[in-house]
Image 1 (cartoon, rainbow, N blue to C red):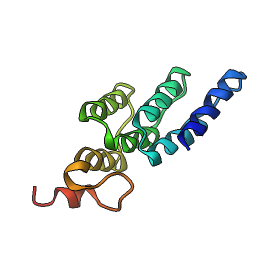
Image 2 (tube, rainbow, N blue to C red):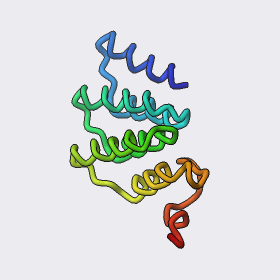
Image 3 (cartoon, helix red, strand yellow):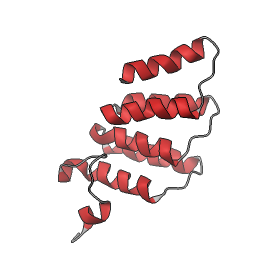
Image 4 (cartoon, rainbow, N blue to C red):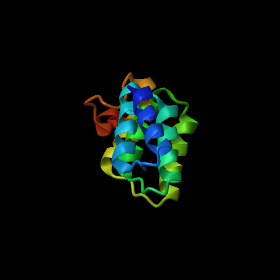
Length: 122
């Protein structure tokens, strides 16, 4: 429930109870599951604006939420991650490739496909 997840974060902030990276991570994960990239990006930006340190897992989940987003938005997430000095890991790269190619191959994050399988014969 994306609205509920965002609502909890906003409620916590309004009563001066500061959410931490775990709270934001859970809310971003809800956005990933619902494929709500604008909400996922909003939460990531709110977390970073609160001076909380994002990690590769947060960015991977935001990437997965971008399955219906324009390619430029997906690329912006990767650029944002690089600007913060967060290193890409195998799961991030696999999710990024699957999300970027998702429409072409009918896949999206959360499927069992491997990026290496998608790229065989390319």
